[in-house]
Length: 314
Image 1: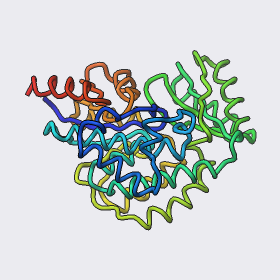
Image 2 (image 1 turned 120 degrees about the vertical axis):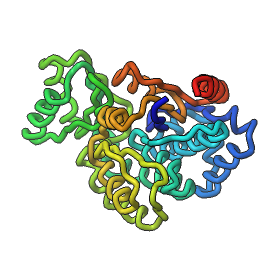
Image 3 (image 1 turned 30 degrees about the vertical axis):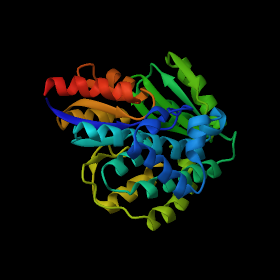
Image 4 (image 1 turned 90 degrees about the vertical axis):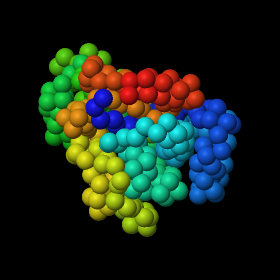
């Protein structure tokens, strides 16, 4: 078997009840949720387990909820003895990857992403920014579209390069609308507006990065024990100063997910294990490369199935 990468999902994978089966059954998992509640001085776990979904979906709640549930699932997975050679996460998931790699303590991670969510929501008033997924168009052609619209005065740019033929654009509401229409006339198969509260991973998030800098300066960032692939560069990072810089840039730069997966494959990864709610990243990785082994660990049953499959080969 080649190398293994652990990957962690971003915003959009949250669901009421996630992690509850493990919380009820394992003390070390329960402790993760309790640590999050203590650090945020509120019952985040109650919101995760009971909802309502619309409250859980708010950026300020979804971000700490996802890092908490993903690290709780990782705690369970660590009992398998299976270790990662690389880690990566999609947007918010990069923070989970850094916690998993020993670079950021969990309590600092959950606090930072709560603040990150606040700053992202504050940066652009609700309704003034948009995001949309563009299907069936390559990135060079789509970048020409976004550049053309931006040049006319309505900012829009590539935000998430997820997989071949799936790219998310982000910017002002008008910019995204104009780029969506232009993309369709230039061959995009479909354009799907996303239910998000702001234009994430666009230059409009620069004010959030300024505020986030203060939070990152106040927490402890250590050298990562396992290399983490940066969303911004699609290259491994492990030094504290670089990690801090990339986390700031990540707020207003595109998430190079497709490039990150390809980079891990170049580095010898042939097995990807998504640890966290949902199966979004597993689906994207399969679109990027059909030959890689891809697993999702989101509850006890999927944990057992993944371990059985991997241990059966070793």
